Length: 365
Image (spheres, rainbow, N blue to C red):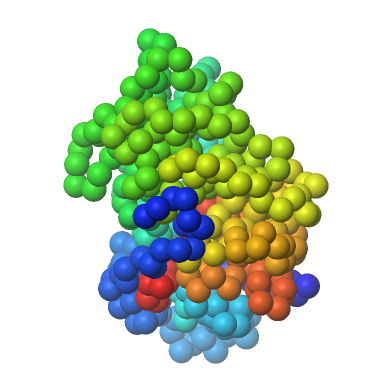
C-alpha cells in the first residue's frame, strides 16, 4: 500500500444490472476537463487561483507541486471534486483537475457541528446536504451549485439524487402523521409532490426512472412506482440503486432487489464486517461495498469477490471512476483511491477531512 500525503494543499429490471446501454456523453465535461483546471473552474462556477509569479515559483520555501490527479494516481481518467471540512464546521469545495493542482473555495451552506455528509448529483456539479434542526431529527436541506447552494426545504427527513439524470433531487418530509415525497427539478422554484402516505416513518434513500426506494424505520425498504404508488416492501437497508431498477439491500447479507419484482442474494464471502454503503459501477457489472474495514468489489455476473482493499473509512460515501477501474472513498483523513486492476491503494490529501466525493469525467462512458 502506498500512502501519498500531499502538502497543504448504476428495461427490464429482471435482468442483471449491466445489461443496458451506457449513459450519454456530457459535452460540457469533455470540454471542461480537457482544457484542464481553468475550464473545470468555469464549469463549476468558481474562481481560478491566481497564477504565481516567477519570484514566488522560484522561492525554495514553497511546497513542491504535486501535479494533477492523473499524475498522482497513474491511469486515473477523471478530475476529482470533493467537499472538505475546515475548522471543524465550515465546508469547502475542493477541485483536483486531471491536470493541475488542487484548490479550494468556501461553500456558503451554513455550519453544523460537525457538518453532515454532502452528496453530489450524477454530473458532479451540484451538491446536497442536510443540516440538523435544533431539538428534532428533521433537517434543513441545502442544494445547488456549490458556491450558490441554498435552502430547498425545512423539516426534511432525507434526500436522494436521481441515479442517472443530473440535477434531479428527491426529498421527504413528515407532517401531521403523514409522509410526503417531493421532487425538485432544475429551473423550478417549487417542488412537485410525487407521493404521500400514512403509516410510513422514514426517508427516500434512492430513486431513478424505475421509481423510488424509501427506507422505513420498521418496514425496511418500501418501493414506490414512478407515479408514486406503493408497489412492494422488503426487509433490509437500502445501500444504492442502479438505473435499470436494481437496488443493493443489506438484509443480514447483501441482496439485489429488483424494482420489477424478485430478489437474489449476493455471495457473502468477505462480508463479516458491517456494510456502510454500496455503489454500482457505471456499466452495472460490478458492485463496490464499503465496510467498516475497507472496500469489497463484487462481479455481478458470478457473485465473486474481485477485491478486498483499502483503509478504514471515515464516511459512508463511495464513488467509481468513470472507467470502472478505480474506487474512491473518504478515509478518517484524506481519500482512499483503490485500483481494482492491480489492487494498489493510495491515501490522498491526508491533511484534510472529507465529507463528500465525486468525479468529473472527461467524457461519458
